[in-house]
Length: 281
Image 1: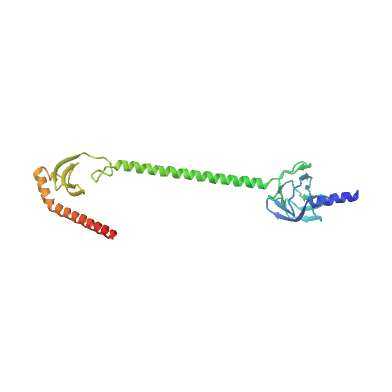
Image 2: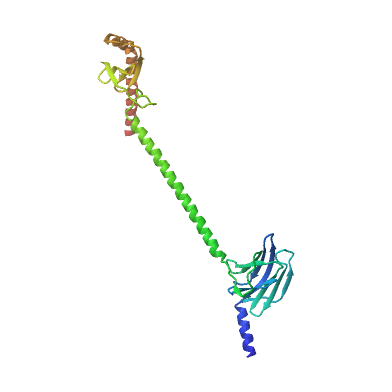
């Protein structure tokens, strides 16, 4: 019977975690005790509160020696680790009422025991509420990613609205200015009535036109190209004789301009023809 009990204890210890190291980290408002295991700890933890100490009973955890460590702190004055068969007792002694919270690490290879000054609970054996950092960390990551996605979507929507507004503005401006020439006021966008006063043909394709827009009269050559020749104000061109006069004054310049255009056109035709012939060979 004794051999069977020893065998059961041995098998139980093989499947249980062992305490490797313990470290104490002192802070002004708390003390953290970090326990490191050789395998993930899956046992339960219970807590017992006494007048001068709080004891954590950690099941399925082994350690080969007893530890008594003094701590120079106003929160916890002594740490005691006591092996107890298939469990380990961690006792925190304090002269104040403290609160103790035990939290396993994500991988289960460690346990953080945090002590802080709070209203002590009534002395009773109650399971310690162990938090799962993996769940909280996952929730924080999901929340962060969700916020990032929402922020990116908001930026994309704002960018699309801005682009749409710019495009609508451009279309409106293009529609407003379509068909307008240099005669229209670009600031007000209001077009005044254009009155054709005189017209004189130069050849089969070009003519000289005098028209009035507002208080100004314009002498323009129209046809293959539109060229503003002169502007008149204050009744400088009143009747047909005045128009004939300004027409003759600009006739020489118009002839030279048309000859120059014909020369450029012929040069382009000759060059295009030469390039075409060379490509055939």
